[in-house]
Amino acid sequence: MRLVLLPGLNGSSHLFAPLLDELQDIDCQVLSLPAQGPQDYHSLSEALYPQLGSTPFVLLGESFSGPLAYQLALRQPTGMRGMIFVASFLTRPNVALPLLRHLSVPLTLATQPKLLRALCLGNTAEEDILQRVRREIRRLDQTLLRARLGTLAALQAPAQTLDLPCLHLWPQQDRLVANTAAQRLPQFCSDIRQHRLDGPHFILQARPKVCAQAIAAFMQEIGANRKPLDL
Picture 1 (spheres, rainbow, N blue to C red):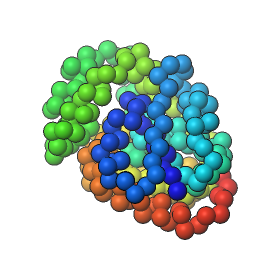
Picture 2: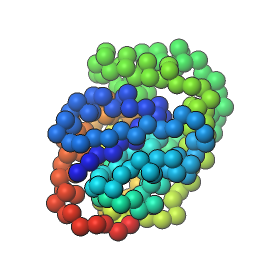
Picture 3: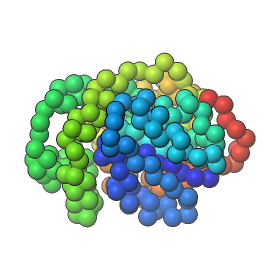
Picture 4: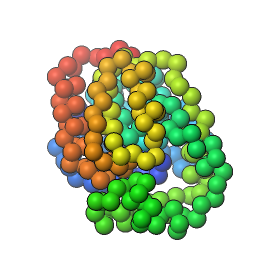
């Protein structure tokens, strides 16, 4: 069974490298987010849906892409067997977002090592991971970044509940997603396992091995039941 991965706010596959190194026994497919056009979740799901394929898969949404994965699941793609939320949410993740989307913060300041460790990676993150995240943030187009922040600021609670197996990898030292947003996920998923992990928001980068083990165990559980799942 495949694992289809949707990246966070950066929109590319680059930050998945540490996790993919730990998932070499699993067929992984990363779908980058469109860098052009509208960045609302409905438009993004329209663009990505044709790329999902029809063979059995589990869909992973990291941070920004959790609600995108949810939108795609509502379209009932052929072969979808389960969903994984990583440091994610289905309601507005932070009350400060409406203000932040209008601020212009120089990326040289936003990517200072001390700030990245405090907000994103934790104090024990290895230097190569820190530099990888730093480079990825600095390459982000500011207009695109503001558009995606606007999407987050406008996020409303879902009207439907997903009835398929879900896993929530929930970092307990997340400084970007409020606990209240993470705690609400079970309201919108009827079959969810919340796995609390010691670590920061960038949990896939800071603790890739532990995350890979949890993902593999979940996929093994889903794979034991091959019959189609209704949403």
